[in-house]
Image (cartoon, rainbow, N blue to C red; front, side, top):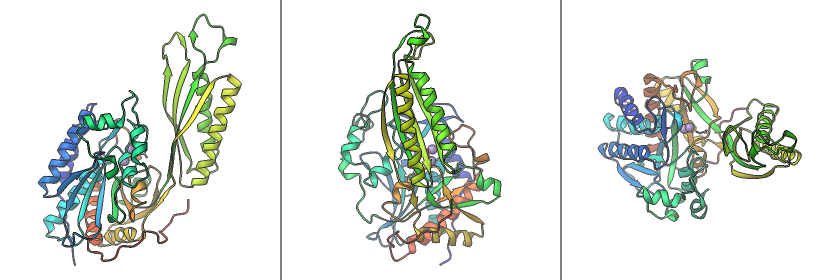
Length: 430
Ligand code: GLV
Ligand code: MN
Ligand code: MN
């Protein structure tokens, strides 16, 4: 069957721009944090678009949104696509949203072309891929995959001490958390369209990337407690300054990653909270959050051990009390071979070049890969910039990614069998 999806480039660009208006910071800086006013506004906008496209919309108790285009075999596991629409503070307008609106436009493009799905095609819009509010990334997809259970979800608190239970109820999400995990075999395949968030495609002039594996992310929270006091009166030999200890730890984090022996190890201390945070007061308490990733899990874990040892040594020497909590320590994900095959064939049908690559950023696909054969499609973004207001992907690249996504969804929708997703995937050496 020849499928020619009709992508409306102007429409998707207009919708991306409208979605960017739901933000706590003015465009082009986007801040959209779970269950805040912009998040709720964006949800209403997206659900409206899905309903307009004739999709059947449902939401779970965490706010994951499912919009289904029913196929002629609705009893079979569906094929899904989607991404997230939350944005870290002062982010750009393409991270996640390209996969949400691109996924919706791929469905509409298939509808316009007269395609009739066999397996249902579902757009999945995830709750909170970013860790901003509750400190843990991929909240929605973790819960869908059963990696985060209802008891753990109930323990989560935001910076202000508000529980996830409280904020989701306030936002109108009262469904049972026990019902969030998807049943075994719910999806036949999952494919996520996303900006690359790195420079490779642009530098190599390749229009599309097919992701064979996603790097293993982990994050740690370090609490430091020293002795505060008057910045003028407290003599230097008497000090146990928590921020000075933090400074040594932060430099250690950088050094351990740099010296891991591989360019694929990255570590970042992206969060630092100082108490009392006043110029004339010796810092008594510091909270750090550290992000460590690698495509090779054992090397990532070695860096984590080094960081923990480093914290111990610095704090013992400086007589500072400390705690280290591992927030998450996830394995990498490998793509499902049948989804990779569909993506490769779709690129062939579209006559476009692609590159097989790994994703260094994490995505909801990291968790979807645990419950369904999964792969991702990357489009270039300018200079590889992401998580910044100047993040940019061209309308042409967005439209091409959407077109190839639509072809891929069509192939997966028509596929008879459901693989285990456990076959050897195409791999890249690191
Ligand atoms: C997702 O945004 C990540 O931090 O990789
Ligand atoms: Mn992001
Ligand atoms: Mn993202």
